[in-house]
Length: 257
Image (cartoon, rainbow, N blue to C red):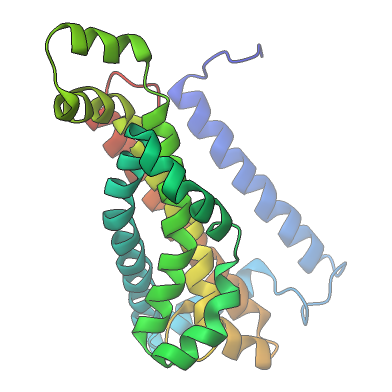
């Protein structure tokens, strides 16, 4: 191994799968060997059986669908509003000077802290859960978009001005194409954070969703179901992450993503 030396695609897949094999081997050794009580940590086989029962008999597929819908809904609303504001802040310094202090302040506020207020304002319906995801994602996206646009190479901007481009052309034909790969990567990363917010929102005042199932399972000490719910979240996130990476590589082949 050498620093920053690329890894062949096949080797990367083997190494990634190897970690999961090792993880489950340690888990099985700890539980089947009696080193950890199954009351506190179910073994892999019991977890798989409980997961099948959840999916086949207890309507967990509907819970998964509700959680995915909430994540995508809240995240898309945040992204649609954050992209233009972030681009404007990155392109025009007076706009950045106006919004940046508040955005920097707001992004440090934990989205979970707003849940009691949002329940008072919007009840325990879908609006409250979408709002939690929006608050947790929007300010992070805005600031990261602004940084991506603001880091555009100045020589590209100067060259465009030399060739007769106007201010609008600079934004649409230089700043946006240059920062688009980083914007796409930002969306991929923040989508992962959105999953943490939706689970927190579903732990309180929800009648459906993966977080709701985990809360019910915790009351019954059903660690097998809790672990299965956590693994489902991880699998969905992993699939989404790979899909984002593949899409970004196809849309921006010139960028090192």
